[in-house]
Image 1: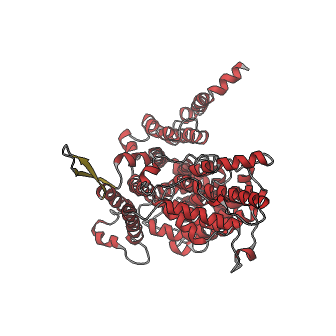
Image 2: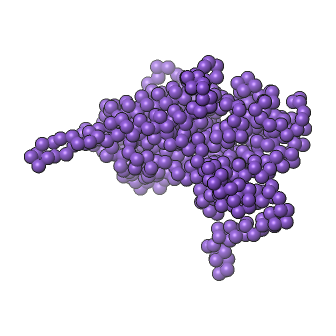
Image 3: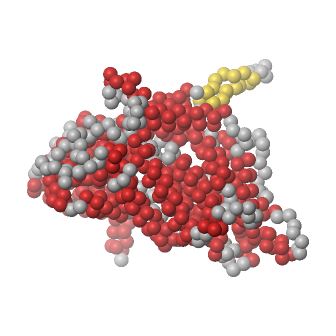
Length: 595
């Protein structure tokens, strides 16, 4: 037993040593560059899947091992760790930092929820829509962490209000004032949002939840010991949690910058197929937006039916008096919005820069008309989406946000400097350096596979798959990716598979986008487990869900997601990229015509 306990304690160290030693005969016996690169690939893949080392640390291994095996010189492999992707990421993080610093994200979320009404079904759709919209521009994790406390406050306030009115009705025959709608926290009108955001809510322990904790304790002591008065209350809490988690992931599909897997695909594709120039912000939005909308709506219907039932007649019944639950919900959302106060100049400037960035991205090279990139036709391909992101990102460090003042010895208050919209320290706190290194390691791994000839070798071995129907190949690759991403991180999954799927498409003489696009989108479909992605973990930490709840709900959304992606790749996406023709920009590993 003591030996077993030691093995358990040092399991990661033993796994690392075991992996390195067991795979070592591969490069020693075969003594080819392909075998040496395969050794590095297998080691990195195992470490990524098991997380024996931190993902970013594992991503540095190609920079160490490729020069030692003589595959890529150290200077060349080092250049793989900083690409155009990283400049794009820096610009996007500047925008996200300003949005969260000035609480613009909270204002947008609450306003969108207020617009859809307070019916439970429409309320969940409102939360899903606002969360999906925010995750198009912010990271999925930060979006879920921001919206979940609002949804939790709404759910808890509704339950508390209904419990209090029931107790009041039992005491008094006549109606009395309902204190359940009152917010315990008094808001100082002079308090700024900057001071509020210094105390960030921890998932499961938000300020709004604490406000209602005493009321919930009364219910637990007076009732059956459960923290939910009815089963419907519990179902409502589960529904809210899953709506936030899943919509933050679905929204990230829509833009290249919405999630790291999209960025990794775009950079890999543009490096491997530099003559294509077909993947940019505008084209990606047009091909993914319809799919995201369909998946979001079907997910809303599925979750609503699974937890509360989907009563169409009740949803669209006009002129019906609002129930107490609906009034309580509307009051909570309204008061939360009023706490933000009037919109400030910093929020307006951030919103304007956000719109400018989006407009420049869309109009750079929309495809159906000439974009503003033709102004730089002399330097074709020099200006990319990262150029736009960097231009707007730098403005956040230049535009004044407020004046800094000091008091002179004579008592006079004078201005001596100004503070920009964001500072470098604030930017650093938001910048996901781990993702930046992880993506760089993926690019280095892809370069090693290409230079060593491993990609070509894999493509030749996979060429017999060309005898299978194309739809079956796409479906199998999508299902494999969807299953793998449930147990491995999304960036690691896509980084690992792109160097394998690209030569597969070339080997069977199929447009690479036919296989790479569905696989990239399916990498985000990590809906089954709390550990599958950070948004799932955030909502799970609130204590309303069990693993089986997430498995049941996530399985349905996984099926919906794969089905919609398959539908899209054979309908509206085909004419956008002429997928039925093998392109001239892709290398051909076999000489055959497409059937």
